[in-house]
Image (cartoon, rainbow, N blue to C red; front, side, top):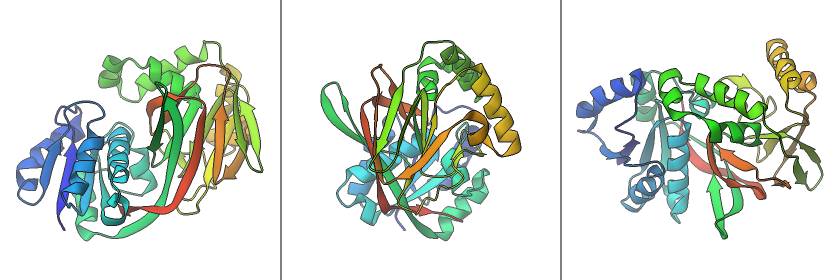
Length: 296
């Protein structure tokens, strides 16, 4: 199989260092495409599809995976012709955990070499940015409210030093700010609150099963709405995670839908797979069994 690896040569951390140590051996079997700036994984993946690569591998975290997914989807025959492989080198790697991929490089590479393919759903979001209509896909999750505001407030030097804790620090800052109401409306369901999280898979923020009913192949998105987001909600959520009852503990509303809209009177960002892409209003939908991924 003609294989391409898209990776960030400047990525830090032990996994990234180990990966760079493998490059010499890897380059004899695959084509390497290093990213040169944030967002450049998307055009590189689209380029790889045009060049006829049958497997395009995202070597990085959830942000890199998201860029590669969008690049594959940008090309007319990308989703039909190209398989996605993942080498989890990021901070949290939620999508890789959902796919039950090993976190160790050698084991993850063996999965890619074995070439077992699974067709999974591909969610998409339509919104307006700078007055122009935009469409973006995501693999694992999306959100609007506290989590997207926390991403805006992340100190990137802290992220380099403290990893996932940088998001916790930013979340505390976001918690202290005024919050806008967000309205989720589907054909047969709806709710409103200060934080809305959307799952294609079960996991959020690591191996936390926030969407227990989610299935990557059911043609539905799982929506969890937190009516209020404050210290009490945070404590209740923590207790809910420990007792496996987060939705009831935090007073969440949940529903599943093939499509729905999010709107807000405030200026609320939308995040996809851990990166903000634009602001509400936004329309979510899902393309069933559209993405070919390599899995154990």
